[in-house]
Length: 169
Image 1 (tube, rainbow, N blue to C red):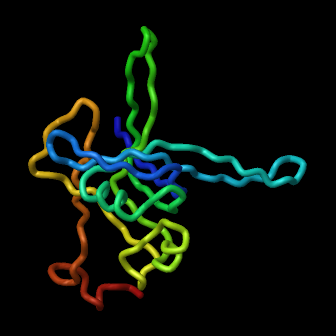
Image 2 (image 1 turned 135 degrees about the vertical axis):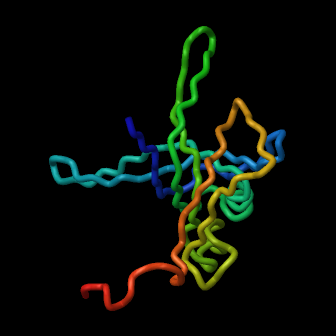
Image 3 (image 1 turned 90 degrees about the horizontal axis):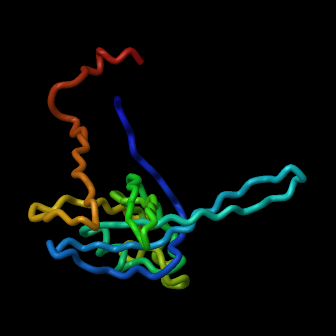
């Protein structure tokens, strides 16, 4: 049976990011993400529902996040869900967290300097995107499941393809 595990979240960091390194040398960071959902109740009042998610980033993405983001920074995360299970005081516990594979910092340079978050690298762009890259010297860790490598095909405009005369519009 086929399965699919993708999640996309946009929200604000709930705390400052702390960067650390695995024994293999891979950077890792964990942080909280608050995502707001606004809905109208049956009596016509607007209510904000906030959901909190734990997010883990690896590699260069984790380093960039720790360098440029702080509590309250707006961010877009794309990744996958992972369930952690453990036993504490004889009781089994579990928690679902997000393994971030792609990150976009939302905001501009001017906004980040006044609010303490957002992008500080580029004043021309309203966001910057970073993806986790696989490390050639990865060692497995029982505590962390590093992201799988991505192989996205990018069209170059050269090579075999359709002639303009073959396109019906």
